[in-house]
Length: 430
Image (cartoon, rainbow, N blue to C red):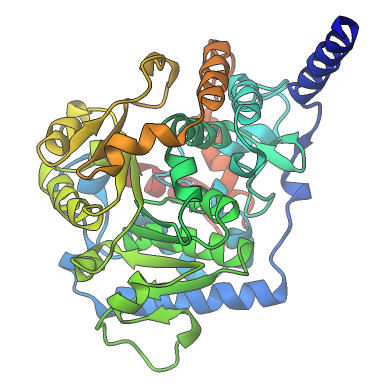
C-alpha cells in the first residue's frame, strides 16, 4: 500500500511540474484571428449605435465630472476614443493595443523578443495562479484584437492576463466564485469594464449569467465590440433608455426598458454611465466589482456609485473592489467613502494583502450573504490559492519601454498619417 501511495505521489509531482512548465512560444499578431466580413458588419452596426448615442446626448452628460487625472482630462463626447468611429478594420483588429485607460502597459512588448525574450514575472505568476483554480476560472482570452503574449494552452498570456487572474483567485479565495456558481442566473455588474476581459471570463465560467457593464461611452465601445465578436452565443444589448435615436440602427443590439434589461438571462448589457440611474430599484444583482477607477474619480462620483450599488446589492449582493488612494492624481479615498455605506467582509485570516501587487483588495456587503460568503469556499481551495500566492514572491525583471512602444502601435495602421501627433494626442488625453 505504501508503495502504491509513493507511486501516486511521484505521478502527482510529475503532473504538477508539467502543469507549471513555462511556455517556450509566443502568440504574436500574425497568429491573431482577424475580423471576418460578418464580424466587421457587426462592428459597423455597433459603431453606428455609439455614434448615434454620442450625437443625441448633451455634452455635459457625456463628459465625466471634474476631478481625477483621467476624469479631469477626458474630452467631451468620445474623447480619445474617436479613433473607433472611423470604423477602420485594421484598427478594430488591434483594439487591445490602442492607447487606452484600461491597460497601464503596452502589450506590443510581447511582439518584440528583444523586450520580452523570456516569460516575464507576469507570465510566471499567471502559470502558478491559474493552476490554483478550476479550469473554468482560468483567464483565457482569445488571440484576437491584438491580444498577444506567451502561449499557455491555446491562449496568449501577458501582464493584463495575470492581473485579471489574480482578481479571480482572490474572488475564489473569498467564496465569491462558488457563490455565483450556486445561482441559476448569476447577475454581475462591473463599474468600468474596460475592454471586457473579466466579462468574458464570467460569461465562460457561468454560461447562463448576465453581465452588466456601466462605463463611459467611449470606453463602453471597447467591451461591446470585443464581447459581441468573442461571445456570439450571448445576447448583446446596448441600453439606450429614452434616447431619441435614428430609425436606421440595428434594433437587435438595442434595449430601452430597464426592467427588461434587469431580468435578462444569458446576456451582456452595456450601460452608458449617464443612464445607470434608470436602474435604481430595478436591478437586483449577486455581485458587483470595480478595479482602479474609484481611486481616480472625484468623491462625488464614488458616492453616487456607492449609493446605487447599495440599492442594487441590498438583498443578496457582494461588492468587490481593488483601488488605491491617489491624492496626487486628484482622486479621493474610496475606502473611507465605501465604509460609510457598507459593512466590510473579512477575507480569510491566512490571506496577506501584500501578495497582491495591484492595489488594496476589499469586499463589502450589507446583507446576510456577507456573513456566509466564506462558507462557499472549500478549505482545500483556500489553502491551494494561499500557497500559489505565496509562491508568487517574484521580482519584476522586465520593464516595458512604453514611451518607445506606444508610437509603434500606430504604425500598424495605414489609415493614420501622422503617428507622432496621434500618439501625443492620446497620451496627453490621459
